Image 1 (spheres, helix red, strand yellow):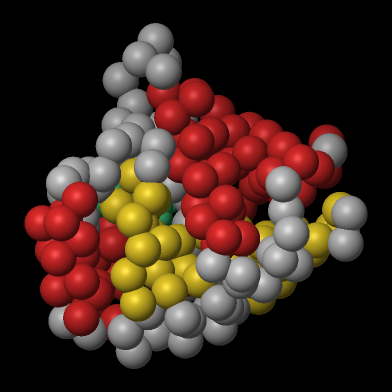
Image 2 (cartoon, helix red, strand yellow; image 1 turned 30 degrees about the vertical axis):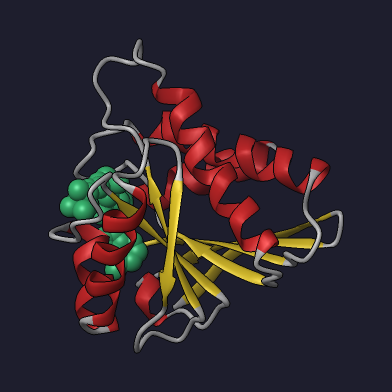
Length: 184
Ligand code: AR6
């Protein structure tokens, strides 16, 4: 994976990486999950396949115990065979037309992922482009929410987290990340 750009804000590194999130070596990898934690497609499927069966098994146990995850919230499992301690399963919204609280729900999915990592005392986290694949969220709008959540988090509540990586898999999405990143 390749670091395409990075900045340092209040001693927290924000990095844009081009590549596959399952190749990252970080304390937590964020998964773009659904409420049922059925990891059947997209980045979720890759995480569940490469991480081994424990990821879907622990996800099933989590849902059995706590019920479905509300949109904008997160659940945690171990990292299985991936190079991370935890997977933080974040449930982003399905894009409809923008009038169904999509913005705040996507912001929450990112903000809650970072909060959970901080609660766990983690130093580094990698996030994919939550909701911007199968869930259909327009990328230029999504990227604004990712950065809003990250900047707010760093300015208000970050304690242990020192590195936040956005791992972009699709080259076509990369320009949107870089554009939004430059404005800040
Ligand atoms: N590394 C990093 N990013 C990736 C990878 C990868 N290996 N593979 C895909 N992406 P999606 P969503 C990017 O569809 O829109 C699943 O079925 C991809 O290019 O994975 O939140 C879940 O179980 C896109 O930019 O997530 C849910 O049902 C981004 O990851 C549903 O899809 C997100 O695409 C969630 O949909």
